[in-house]
Image (cartoon, rainbow, N blue to C red; front, side):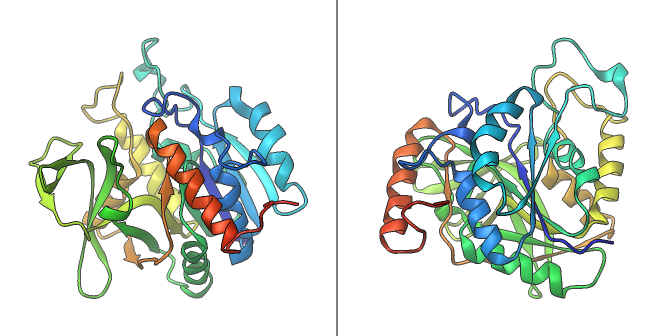
Length: 302
């Protein structure tokens, strides 16, 4: 199999809390997006291909902006997340208004991902070190069902403007992830409260507790796990108007069934993200600081 490292960018989200398509919001004077900085870091770390998972109606705007900027610098492909691309069309209602979640999103890319791959959110900045760690793991770890998570402490990936959704990690002394629970994270006075999205009992975490920002390094074999989980999603008692097949839930099921091993390695890189519209100014300010410190060129692609 082709050993070309691929970056899979999940960019089909609707950005409801942000109030627009936050994946294509300019963050510098050259109208680059956060995705541009992610791709810049990935290229530097040795990734050779990028796949954008988008809604088909957004293809032209992606191709004419970030796609055009990176042509000739990295191989580019597109995959479309479609509402009717599901195993059981009888579950599809006309009232369904959003895609089926991050499991479906990644599955959309299967035909254009040749080998090991990293997954990221389009509206998150992870920093060069995170891509370097992921690339090194994917090239050097040859265990087919062993994958990697890059978590961050919750106090570095929070938003002061409201609650956020994060995958809370639990792990052993050998850096093996034992559980990952998708939660809504909010502040309860001076405590940090995690409310599992599956309805389980809420719990508190400390400010340094690692949480997933959907940055993973996967071997190509993980597509089989995703396919099985997504197929079973439509056999279970879900609300097919609103429920989504989420990547952390898939990973948790695979861990519980001993189908995969998930290592984790923390990164010292900064994380930046746009959950709410109010987050944008601080992201722009931080990136400007990084350019002034020569971490990035003043003009990213020029």
